[in-house]
Structures are given as C-alpha cells and as structure tokens.
Amino acid sequence: ASLEQIRSVETEINSYVTLDEEGALKQAGEVQKKIDSGELTGPLAGVPAAIKDNICMEGMLTTCSSKILGNFLPPYTAEAVLNLKKAGAVILGKTNMDEFAMGSTTETSAFGITRNPWNLNHVPGGSSGGSCGAVAAGECFYALGSDTGGSIRQPSSFCGVTGLKPTYGTVSRYGLVAYGSSLDQIGPVAKDVTDCAAILEAIASYDSKDSTSLNREDTEFTSALKDEIKGMKIGIPRDYLGEGLEQDVKTSVLAAAKALEEKGALVEEFDLSLVEYAIPAYYVIACAEASSNLARFDGVKYGYRSKEFEGLHQMYKKSRSEGFGPEVKRRIMLGSFVLSSGYYDAYYLKALRTKALIKQAFDRAFETYDVILGPAAPTTAPEIGKSLRDPLKMYLGDIYTVSVNLAGLPAMTLPCGLDAKGLPIGLQLIGDCFQEKKILQAAYAYE
Ligand code: GLN
Image 1 (cartoon, rainbow, N blue to C red):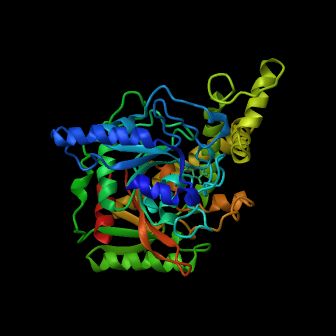
Image 2 (spheres, rainbow, N blue to C red):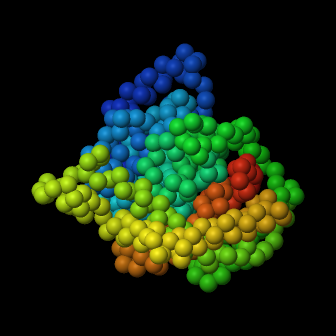
Image 3 (spheres, rainbow, N blue to C red):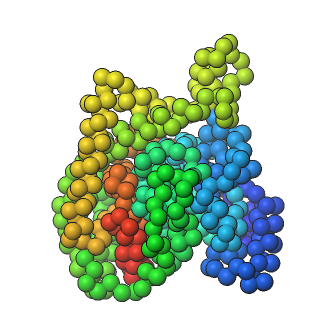
C-alpha cells in the first residue's frame, strides 16, 4: 500500500531522497515468515517506515541532503534503525531534509524541495520535512526524524502529524550524522499518539557506542496511553502567547487547553521567563557545534571531492566550497566566529550560561506543573520560497522549540486544528526530563 501511494504522489511531494522498493519487498517477505512462525509479534512487525537521510543505514545512501555526502554509503547502521528492524520494521527508504538538518522548511536540501501534502504551494517545515511529508501523504506508516531545535516537532505541526522528541540520551545517536551533538535526538513521526509511543518504545535503548546514552528502565511508553488526566497540572507560558503568534494558532492552542481542562486537568498561565534568550543561545551553540562536527567533511574521508585542485589545502577548500550549500556555510562561519579566541567568552560562554538559566527556568516550572502546553510554531506552514530570503526571520520561527533542546527535555506535537487556509496547526506538550509518559498521557487524552 505504501509503495502504491509513493507511485501515485511522490513526483509531486518528493519526500524521499532514496527509495528501496526491492529491498523493502524482500524485508517484508522475511518479516512475514517470522510473523507466521510466531517469532515476531510486536505492533511494528511488517509495518513500512521511512528514515531521515541523516541516519545511517549500511549500504544505503545517506546524504544528509547535501552534495558533499551525495555518494556516501555508510558501512554501518544506526542503533535506532537496528532497534526498529528487531521489531520487524520494513524500511522503504530515506527521506529528504534541510541540508545537514539546518533549516526550517526542507528548502535547503541539495536534492529539491519537499511539498506539503496539505497544500503543494507550501513547505512541509523542516528539517525533517521529508519524514513528516511522507507520513502525512501516506507514503509510509511512520518515520524517524531528528530534532536539534525543533526539526521533528515543527514539521509535524506543519504537516498535521504527531512527532516526539525524547529526553536527551533516550535514543542512541550512534549512526546519526551530528549537527549539534549536545542537542540532537532521534524520534518518531507518526499518524497518532499510540503509534508514537510504540515506536519510541522500540527505539529507546542504552547504547555504549553513544557516550551520552542513558540507561533508562522506564521505557514501556505504551503503558501511558490512558484516557485519564484528572488532576494533571498543565501550565501555559504566557510568554508563548505574545507578539508574533498568529491568531488562528493561538485560538486553536487555547481551545486544546480548554478541552484538556474539561477532561479534568488543572490549566493555568504562568511566566516561564528567558524565552527571548532561547533563539540567540540556541543558534550560538548549534552553530558552534556544527562548525566543529562538519570539519570532518574535507574531501578525504567521506563523499565529494573537487575534481581539479593543486595541493592538499586547495583540495579541502574546493571540496568544501563546492560540496556545502549556502545555509551550511553560513552556520560554519557563524560557529567558527563564536568559538574563535577573543569572541569565545562574549558569545559561546555566554550562550552556555544562558542555556543553564533556561534549564533552571524549566526546573522551576516543573516544580508546579506536570506538563507545559503551547504552540509548536508561531505560524502555520509558509509558502514555498518565502522563508530563505530572510534567514533571521526564519530563525525566529524556532522560538517555541529550541529551549526544549537546550534543556534536554522531551516534547511532542500533535494536530489541534486548521487555520483559515486549511493548513494544520500543532499543539506542543513539553515534559520534565524522563517524563515522556506524562506528555503521552496528556496527548492521548486530548486526541
Ligand atoms: N530550524 C532549526 C535549525 O535550523 C532546526 C534544527 C533541527 O532541529 N535540526 O537549526
């Protein structure tokens, strides 16, 4: 069914960078045998899925939607994908994204844009726009995305699907091409809350190959799917409802809060504070880490190498100049600048201090509230071609998502209505560290 849907809509949507039709059918056959013999019984057995193209799979192109990795065949598979395979997943292929996960629209991909299945003139969001577009268009039943500063939650919101960013350390980053290593997490993009819980349960695991991996014992996330939220305390940051938030988004998000209140939750507004510092702190830290992480793409070890050069230094220079796109170059320059001696204290160190204060503000909030509720993004999906012209404005669109990564928290988005143009609006639920079950419970009760 997924392959049939891909055949009928993929030329318009362009969710996939690589499709592995033959491999998927072969996997399906093997999984079917294991289901028949009773070896595989879980909910994911035989269900077709797609993987964001910054997550490695042995022998399958992993491009990060960049020319510099256009021919990269990884020699190993990411731990999260291995976990899915153990659960019987059938992998259809790799999904499009903003180059190296840098962007909010999937327009910075070197392999063409992905279109929003709800309205082909609009972007699907980003950077996991291919994963979210594929789920929304029925080109797979679920997908994996990655979230460094909202890249699962914002495109899920724009595409009317459900996405979850786990507590930092819950899903192994082994095999995820690093963007901002202290912020990156892999997570599920799915059709509903139940699917999200089941997928997270499958991919969460301790992994000694990731030095930041956590050994959690509370990963039976599907046990949280109870339609019961009496007495749950939900806080709405007043700072999330101010300037820049589109009226339709605000109305739908507040209506969702009301619905939860009617089911017995205690809902109130509060001041989270420091919200205006989240974007500057995030972009300093993310770019700093990116500039360091992307140093490995030099034309020697991986991917693209310039055809003509004289000497080693020119080879580096030309390979990187020709291989990286403009948004990636902008971030490497920003990151190198904030890390350079003389500026380190003024920018990078200050951003790290701000990050600590943001974490404290959340800690204080979670002394009172079980779950924080707000929008996922200030607007619905913008039209294609409107965002990249003004990168600063595009960065400001990450206002409600990036602080979650700075604080390492779990958060999810799920659909809560449509705007006047008929585009989906996303509700964001944020939990304290390790409290995925609380946000899943609230989400399930709302859904
Ligand atoms: N818009 C954010 C950025 O460009 C999203 C990053 C992400 O989560 N991968 O940095």
